Image (cartoon, rainbow, N blue to C red; front, side, top):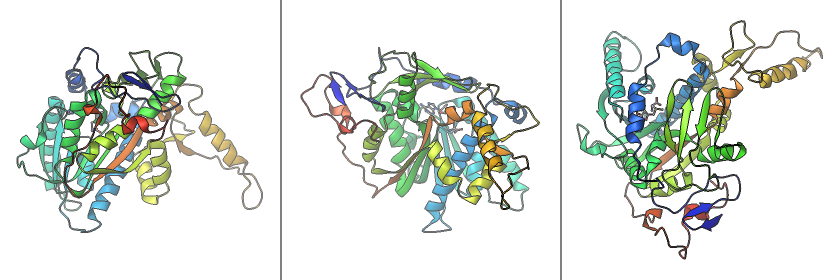
Length: 409
Ligand SMILES: C[S@@+](CC[C@H](N)C(=O)[O-])C[C@H]1O[C@@H](n2cnc3c(N)ncnc32)[C@H](O)[C@@H]1O
């Protein structure tokens, strides 16, 4: 990696970063745009979700979150099976994970999101769940919950909890952490909200776009944009050789769901910033690797089916993907299976059906990664971070994020 004045250029494959503080041009603040987008987003009913082009992709993402959440709750209970578990759902949206928390048998939940309408909707959903759970004889009892509308990149949540001394066993930030990388201060406040009230040994888990993958796809594209009929990523700045550490903006469009500015999260920098809150990265996996690993487990495989996270191929129904090459991989795989001889040396005559995803959905899914941080002893530390660096000081040794060689995270 070469130091190119204010920016740092990475010569191959991986993400790039600079030592510049907050990379925004002209101090534009995009949190309002993001909040407006999510506030205006209509909640799709079950039926329209079922017809959606990204029906299986959404289910697949929900499966990923379910496994990540379930596995982390299991780890928390390792030392004490009857432990009372308190969770912070950071950027909780419309409450898409409320049922997961119920299934996980937690005791207390705090949901926080910038979009006030989403917070109201999630609270209403929780009230419905409370009503229903009164009539339930079996299954885990419903947790206590509180709901907070706040910009988690600018406001300290401890000032807003009913009990300001509340301590969490787990913070979950799903598909949202990247919004905080608009500026260094916002990323730090988001991290503070995620980690400062965690008990020692507590976890901070999440899913976020993999900036290595985004930059790789950008560099492979012919212009400043890439994607397919499901998702599209557009970088406003055509200079793809270098990116600021913060405020490295791109527009993310996901069919019918998301269309707003997001920011690259340079992961080695996030790791470094998390040290300030005594957090250690214990797992980071692309969605593809996470899936390959977890699907080996029978419970995870069963859940995949139950959640319709894969599409049956071939099918008599209409397939969600309409592009000619959306299912080539599936038909090739089936041909291989069918050509394999059975125990008696005959090739299979039975028509084979498999679970798969359209190529376009898989391409969108594989933009993301899963991360798990754990709180160590619990003491917050002074960490030398890039914020202390001078913009124009090229003499100083470069920061750890820059020292890491290409694609090394
Ligand atoms: C893709 S949605 C994910 C919602 C939820 N975590 C889930 O997995 O269903 C991203 C969420 O991040 C929220 N968000 C974005 N910027 C935020 C901020 N600065 N503070 C709090 N929430 C924010 C949005 O309002 C939206 O609800």
